[in-house]
Length: 216
Image (tube, rainbow, N blue to C red; front, side, top):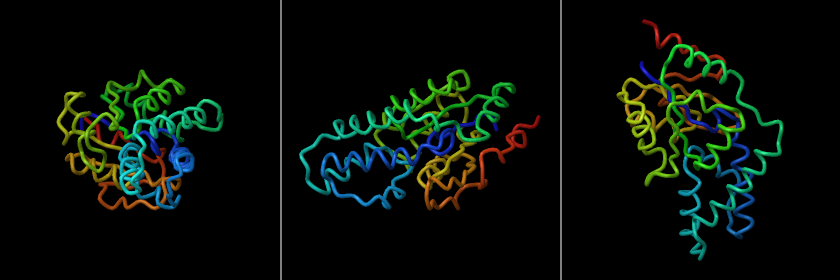
């Protein structure tokens, strides 16, 4: 293996609950019916794709961009003001190890670029990543492999030489469709996710030993 690509939500920070809260607040604001339990089905996919589907389903005269902007504002307010939000236990140790060993790393997330940048800035993570890709900027969302294929291209490595760390069914499917090795983090806050396609499933980020994959 030559590189590691990290999903962000549920892998770097435990932010899936924030996404659920802000999605539901946005639906309420625009009077669009949606059951909170159904958020699990869309975890790992872009907010834009979810909002577009709901606008079409309910035939609403609302722009996707307007709804996304509303949700992003709510998310950033929580990120800025909730001091309990911290990197997931074990993630900083992984990033330090990869940096020390000069192993290329990247973020390949379905979150919007504004949100990814805010998280990276808040926790001072920029120096750990050679590339940061937002799936929200691409035509297709996870489980389509586009975000991971582009990330591998930016890192200058073959997809088959990449490890992806994911926490959702959509993300695992995207990683495997890209031809990458996938470690799935079984995050309880990501709900009931089918992670069976992953090459390895771990109960916590701190239990991942990346040295096993990068021995000379």
